[in-house]
Image (cartoon, rainbow, N blue to C red; front, side, top):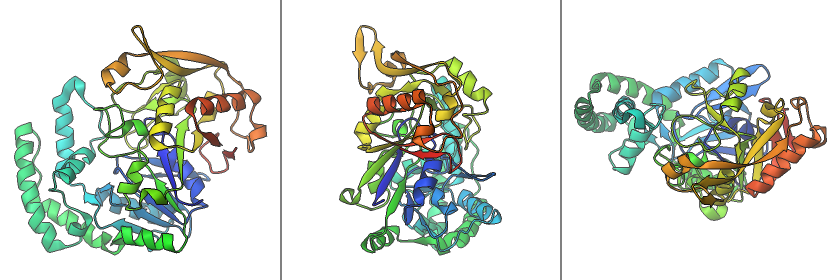
Length: 422
């Protein structure tokens, strides 16, 4: 296994939760390194469905250490709810779970600011989950944020929170938002801090000790490559580095200790929220939504759907240094007679074999398609590569070749045993 980074190679929602759960069997430590509870990783164990927003998917396996790294922004109330919810479902969350003392905290004023800024943008809104993630990262960059180490120190929390709420309420008032109550927030967050204190420690030291013991670490990304604050379809992005480089800055493990990058992608393309999606197609959207697929685990919103975009995934391979591909949701295409794959973009007289950085240009691009014959037979019962229909294998090989990385996993359903190692 060695040290492996798992990233989304599209716009998020690629099925990372399931693939992380599968790969965790071979890992000792699982680290979440970016994002917040705007993420939603879904894992099915038998008939039970688990949706994880902050806690790494490795928590569903025994004898695995799960770590929330310094690059994550944490809503303490949400985290407490997630921990207690898992415990009620019989999942152990104790000494197997650790939170970085330098991870930044999301407060109610961050959520309110998030919502008000979306209102002000009107038709130019980004489509944020309104979980306060962007404003929390904004405070981090502005060097005024509070961290988990502050949360678990009542005196420090009270002093620093008083100043932040006073300033944030003045901004909220100007934006037409609802001010938050210092007294109420302090009481709620002191309670959460007391609950979470046993989990909080120096995770950088912890991870380096694990490496010295020869333990294998799996780094769990959130969202996807094209939601990265630097490499995504800006401004329609999240506020963190969702690409492989974020695993280093978000955990304290240096680049030369990373051994492998696995990119997760769907056999087609989806996106939640606003922003360009060159291969968006109403026919495939209707098909997938009609099957009960492609609704957000965090928001419940219907995802926008389109054909597979190899221009985008090739760019993701380049940015992340993807070695291996895990292709999910292959079974979603089982009934499609002719499957399209975008191999280039056309904008006016110009042809693009790469993704333009300008979101407006990308939105105006027309996809250039190659077509593949569908297999028109169910794949969800396939257990081995040879059990997949020949046309499904040909399709997988083609999109891997177009993406520029080695095919590693094909997933034909949400369950662990619906995973084919190629």
